[in-house]
Image 1: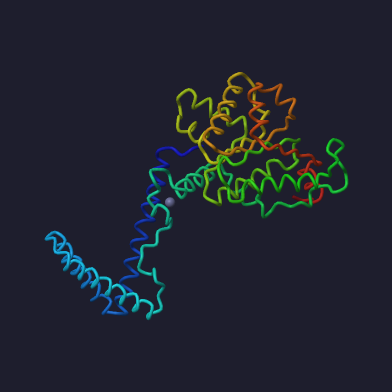
Image 2 (image 1 turned 45 degrees about the horizontal axis):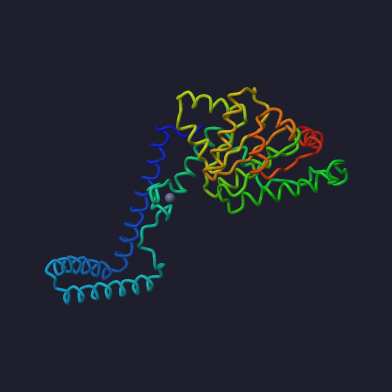
Length: 327
Ligand SMILES: [Zn+2]
């Protein structure tokens, strides 16, 4: 679920708190330094006086005086730096340390949502959809190749599931590492329990970690949401689905198919392509079934814009159940 305006207000108050915290910490740091070095405080007062004098000189057009005051201020600042270092502090100890150095905890940079705000939104969305717990278990750190058969070769490709998964894993890692929205799209094709959802969760976890906005929907839910928003109930939601940095559509082909679904899927894929956003789609359908289920323009968009990863393996969920009894 995309963030509502109430949720947005909450996020803005989180940022406000961060700003207030940063300023409070700076004041505390200043008080601490002054306590240890009263002369530091005297210099600070002298600088304030010089600044005021400088403004007056500026207004009078007295450039000589202005220059003299400026170099006086610089001298005092330099002496303060020496004192600070002498007390064992870092150079930037008295600067304001914002949580996000990009936007100084305002949430916006150059008129656009900063990465930190998008990350907060993503966090909220993931909290709301209970997927956080899933991502703690399913990520590149917990991905285990031991579940993939190294002996039996797939007759069509001549590769073992292990070799095949190594390749898929590499493509997923390529996409997620130093994520750039729009650089790559993946289409995961294969039967149930072959690791498609696990691998898309790995990508999601990594991309969220880097602070990008990620939305995950099973196909049926996605089309429900798009239907809601198409009829004006939540236009924000449509914007989020089309505009988030990474959209994951799970289990495409399991939804009830009709012309509405067809046109929405095309619009979604097309819009995301134009906005340079990345999408991962997983499906149990093969290429022919995709073509039969959706329009030609959908399948051709997928063919030209998506790197296809095929998945084949005995059902991993079954294997895990057999090998770890009692779970
Ligand atoms: Zn920021």
